[in-house]
Image 1: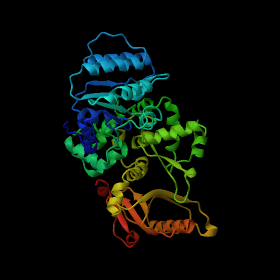
Image 2 (image 1 turned 135 degrees about the vertical axis):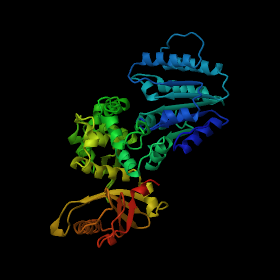
Image 3 (image 1 turned 60 degrees about the horizontal axis):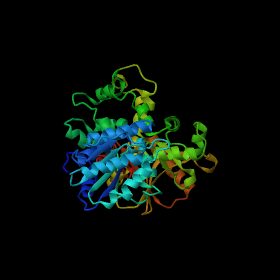
Image 4 (image 1 turned 60 degrees about the vertical axis):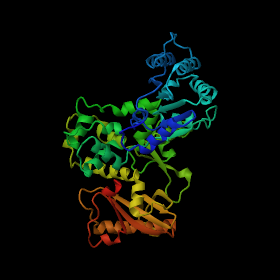
Length: 476
């Protein structure tokens, strides 16, 4: 089991240990669509499977079962058989294939398992019977199941409360690449790109390897983005619709939520979302929000000093934010991205997108601040103006609240040069600290922290900033 795969060393090692175990192993791999789950598994096992199958998008059980039989035949099943009537019968055929296999270690890879679970399906019962009643009693099977529908995997496999409860030997959540890993990926493909361009690419593509795979070394970043999203034959022109439709059975409910969240930078509470969408503040809303968070499209957070019932939901997916800002209205310009350089819309997007990248790299920020080993919580905070009581009205997008009784009040500023603290901005920072301490009554020490692309320009106001984190620090 050798591989040249980028940035997945820990996951490769875990899969290797499952393969080398003296007992049968049940493995679940999950993560958002396009993050590289199938590629990881195929590379890890060197494309050698006793049986490999991938579910079909749709909700037709007879077609799923017929497709399953075709996969059995492709894997060497020799007996003639009719399409089974249910999954119990289908897994009996899989047992026959395994019994006849001469492989020392039988690796069974079932991809897009959630698509096989059609309405009224007996899939989970059949999978339970296959594993609990047969495969786990052997010593030569590695069963690997995978799906992009992250919530389905969490609810039906990982947190199963039925016969599959606590049956997994290994679960792998495959996370998007970090900035550092994207840089490693480009280096492996011999694509030369500055860190400024990699950062901008990340602000659009996030850490999704599939999107990065479309970059061509002979193009600039702007040319690549045009070719990927805006050209007449752009391969990702319709990615937004396909992405949500492939993950959720009722994608319109999910799209209505992310559409609402895209309009409010700081996010919305459940109550606010119920007013802005077709969903009532009910169990359906809970399911949709949980699914979106499990798939990495949104994050939930509490404002400092508030309890969980005040939870705010914020759109965090880089590509989705890019879509709503630039693609939703389908610009009729094959070179839209190149031609939008230095426009007000693009400049305002840069600031918001950079903030999202910072939120996705909090471990790197903590490392730069020298607090990697300190227990922390990350919050935002805001208050309305109340001038009668000396409150100016403030919003703080990131507070790193530390167990050592220090709070890093983080300001995230995208700039193409060193960031310069002006007299007015210095006053604004002072007002934020004043409002925060006055309203919260916090006794923690406040450390002003600037996170910016190229660092801080030294001037008469920069001395009040206690910590500076640069884009290079986010690449660590």
